[in-house]
Structure formats: C-alpha cells, structure tokens
Length: 287
Image (tube, rainbow, N blue to C red):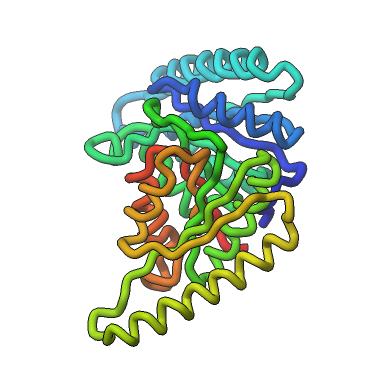
C-alpha cells in the first residue's frame, strides 16, 4: 500500500449527477502538485435484474451520458492545469467495486458528493463515498463542500490516537504538509474515564501528552521543514477534529481507530468526520 506522495497517479471520481468542478479541481491541482498524471473515472452501474424487459438501451444511453460528462470534466481539468496529463476511464459494474479496483494503481483517490445525510446518503452516486473509503487500497480524499473557506497561514489537521491506522494517517499528513508547504496541526481527543479520580485524570492526561510529543517528534525529524503543533483537546473526537479543521486545507484521519470492533472496515471517527467536517477529509488506510 502506498500512502506517500509517490509517482502513482491521482484518480478522480466524477459524479455525473452533481457539479463535479470542486472535486475535479482538487484532484487536478493535487496531481500537478505531485507531478503525476490524473485519471478521471465514472462508473456505469450494472444492468437491472429484469425478467421481461431488455435493459440494454438504458445502459447504452447512460454510458453515452456519463461519457459526455467525463469528457467535459477532462477538458476542464486540462484547461486548469495544462501541464498535467489527464486521461479518462468509463468503468462498468458496481461503482464502489470498480473504483476500489482502480485504487490499486493510485496514490490517491479523490471523490466529491459530500451529501452524506438524508436520502442522498442511500441513493445515487453519493453512496459511493463510505464503501470506497472503507475498501480503497490508497488514501481517499472526499471534497466538495461549496461553503468551505481556508485560513492563512494554510494548515492541515490530522487526528491521532495510538492505533496503527492513526500512525499511517500521521505519516501521510506530514508528507502532504511538506508537499504543500503548509503547517500541520496534530490533535488527539481526550475523554477522561468516567470513574477515575481527579488525580488519575491528571496523571493519565500528562502521560498522553508525553506519548503524543514523542510520536510527533519522530516525524518532525523526518520533515523538519513542516511547522507543526500538537495538542490534546477534551471532547468527542469527531467534534474536536471538525471544529479544529473548520478552515483547514484538509482533515486527515485513519480508516480505523482503536475503538470499534475488529471487523469494522471504516471506524466511527472516520465516518463521523466524513459527515461532519466541512473541509476535505482524507481517509488513510493501514499499511
């Protein structure tokens, strides 16, 4: 699994049912920053299970329509970043499965469709986000909130705990901050045990701070050019991270934290961040 800014292409998923410009802009700008090609893709869902009706005309029409959208998106991306090579792929089959296979050869997958509450979370192409974030072989960036504004000086936020997934997210965040020339804010959410004494709270809090400082120091040695801050903030993890990343370039989280159950592919913090945060959210899998 490749989590750094290597030579693998950036893959952008084009949503034919909504405005694709924000995620395509993010994808082609990221490809230009990395000096790698951009592949734009859209999937044509499989035929419906019909016993007496030939579904071929509908599928052909849908393929033509989605191909046209894909071509327009590619032309727009080439105009935005003339020096970046842009290719297109019209995929067939279930969108989540097709994009997960495509992620095998990518350094990053970029999606839009941040409509993750209400009917849009279950119907239409926005249903691609959660399954792909859970299954992709590379980091998945989900962008597209039209009201998001960034703050200067620019910074990324990464959420950490003591999980392997969190460590992968931290490494990716440092590499991305170095690539973008921005600062990095490392956050751990603190939720004191219910039955611990006041003294116990303080001792455990100090231990958590020490461990966080040690982890960050190791990555800072590898990326001395990245301005970094780290802190532990009291509160629920999703709310802590979403508030801290309100005006960030992006929020980086691991696919699974230390909570949840073993079979869960996408942890509760990653799910919550995808629903709650207004900035781009990058979900990093465990190597």
